[in-house]
Length: 76
Image 1 (spheres, rainbow, N blue to C red):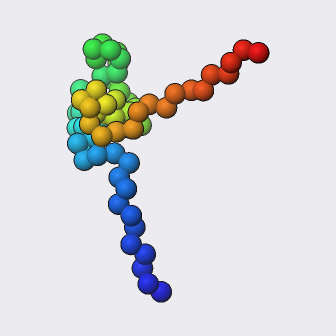
Image 2 (cartoon, helix red, strand yellow):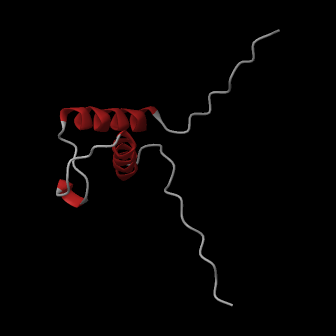
């Protein structure tokens, strides 16, 4: 069987990946804080660290997907 070459459609850019990596490193050090201005508690979860890294990447206008909007049902 021939191996299939996977298409390289990156979901996030390299710069966004770097900001996620730095957020995870800060979580490991224990310096990553949650909330506006870092006034919340220390981040414990890996998923939360990834979400914070992607959020920072969005603020710096790096290639990352926009947040998903919830669809609202219109009143009848």
